[in-house]
Amino acid sequence: MTTQDTPRAVVLVSGGMDSAVTLAIARARGFRCHALSVAYGQRHSSELVAAARIAADLGAIEHKTVAVDLRSIGGSALTADIEVPEQGGAGIPITYVPARNTIMLSIALGWAEVLGAADVFCGVNAVDYSGYPDCRPEFVAAFEVLANLATKSGVEGTRLRVHAPLIHLSKADIAREGARLGVDFARTVSCYQADVDGRACGHCDACRLRAAGFAAAGLVDPTRYR
Image (cartoon, rainbow, N blue to C red; front, top):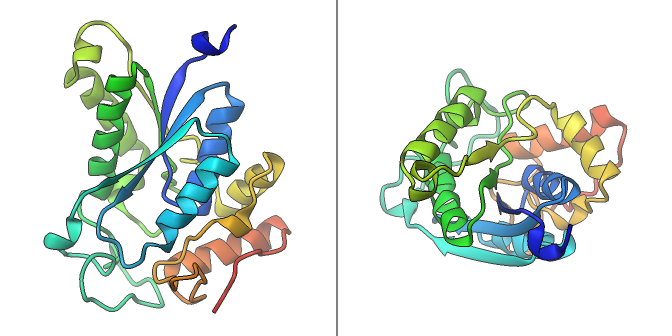
């Protein structure tokens, strides 16, 4: 198979460990990967800087960042002046960003159509996560149905696929898979309130889940903490 015949995929890359492993998996499956990040008004830009690093490190053929102003509607500790909690409570936490994954996948789907790609990858996870409704298998399956109903590509017979290769993995499993595929986790930023240098707080849900994953996997935690 020539390079030109290799299938393309759009891969959502946030800058965190999950999306880095997702990009590595997509590459390992033989896709030519177009990395997509979304500047949605999140609390810091260091994760977007990390996303560019990861895309280059893991061989994406290009990396694009699209801006969407979710801060203008707020409703989340990540897009409004609401304190990031250090402990997850009952129910869906305030760090949930309304419709974020739906919006990101929609942008990825649009770019996939332009590129002539039939595959979109995202790093959502339904095991060690914070209870977000748009990280569940049901959401991914429903979005794939929508993708095939709402696009020119789908209507004209191209079967569009939404891949969520981490959906049933624990954080420890994700850490192990990333290590196997050569992901440099020190280059990633997962913290909800990382500083301008990408150093993590060590206290938010994202930090605690990440640290627990490395510990359970028996791997050294390469996270830079402030």
